[in-house]
Every structure is written in structure tokens, then in C-alpha cells.
Length: 136
Figure 1 (tube, one colour):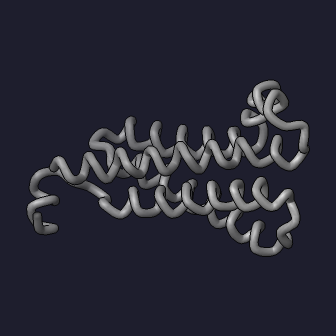
Figure 2: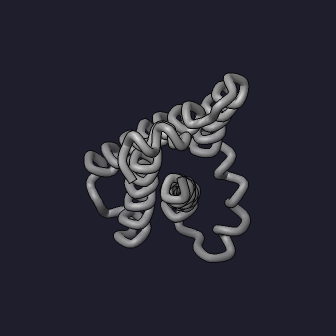
């Protein structure tokens, strides 16, 4: 399918799933590396993965809003996605603490599981975007 076909059939902003996949991969990779190494990896590359993943996630949330047809839906999805991602990273991820404590008492595991969950959700949303674009 050509780009012209996608435009005429309604596919909008086909770059969004790629950005969401990059954001999810960065966040999930950071979480996996820290948990697997026992928090022995230097901070500099982990900060790059973390900030890059969060910033790409914000861009993907705004892009998800741009993919909508109605203006209200655009604003709602973009703003809601950004707020939800930031709230999850900042504090809502701590709701998983009781479940995580059943598996591990290590502090770095409790800190990184919410980041990994955010990355996995972004990867799932990217897959959903890819599959919807392929159907058009």
C-alpha cells in the first residue's frame, strides 16, 4: 500500500507506532538491565535510556492524539496519555509494591518493575498501532 493510499483511506501519522516501540524498548531494556545486573550498571547509560524512553513516550502519546479524527478526541488522548505516563512513572507504579515484595525484597527491583511495565505497555500499544495501520 502506498502512502497516497494510506492518506485517502484514513491512515494518519503512521510514525507514531515506531516512536511508541522505541520508547517501550528503551524503558523495558533499562528495567531488565538493572534488575538482571543487580543494579551494578553505571548510571549514565541508564539515565539516557530512562529519559529517552520517557520523552519518546510523551511524543508517542501526543502522536496518538494526532491520529484521532475529532478535535476533542485528539486533545483528550494526547493530554491523557502524557498525564497517565508521567503519573505512572512518578507514583502510580508504586501501587505494584505489595505484589513486587512477594517476589523480591531488593529495592532496585521495586523501583524498576513499574518502569518495565510502562515499557511493556508502550510496546503493546505500538503493536496495536502497527496492526491497525496494516488493516487500512
